[in-house]
Image (cartoon, rainbow, N blue to C red):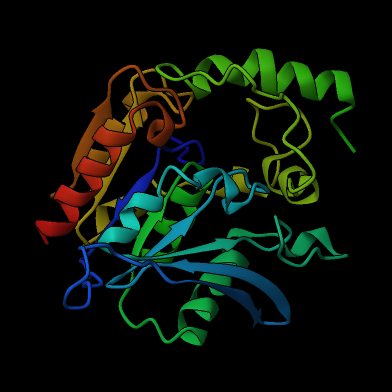
Length: 270
């Protein structure tokens, strides 16, 4: 079983809050900071929201950016310091001339470089879609306009959203999408064939060695089929699986309350 199409992997930890001054109504003020880390010669963009135990959030694609998480995950800043990054070649991070440098191994080192630069210490990881592959690894010339519109609208859209489809959805991923990263890693044959460097990854046996508390979330209509997540749960000892109803790949959009409650329950059970 290839695991490059795996559903989100989340291994999470604990909380913090900001208290109102005497005489003021109780209201939390969340601090937001951002910047770049020179990670092994590549400028990686990061954004931090809130305070408390760090929850490091990894986006999908590969080649997307952190933007699609917002504002859906922002409420988690009430109990954690959220750290978002744009992976190399994606979003606001540096584009590279040599596409061969877009690898899972290098991206994992980028995550570690940001963790060290921000002096985060122990972190929790929440990976969505391809970000789940990075989370697992950390723990242990195509696309003409008509093709891209068809692939993302007709091919992906029915599996992205179920409960809350966006009436204003634009099939173009937009200017922040790092297509060089996507092509190098995912491949050049098509959306449902992996012939890039991700095709060499098979974590089936390695999942058995995961020893950190693990939460796996998946939508019941996810493009990463629920049975894949069920197999992951069997392989990761003590892991917990939450299948979100009426959900596609963007579970935190379709079922934001259920998703955030699942994360919070897991966090506070540690």
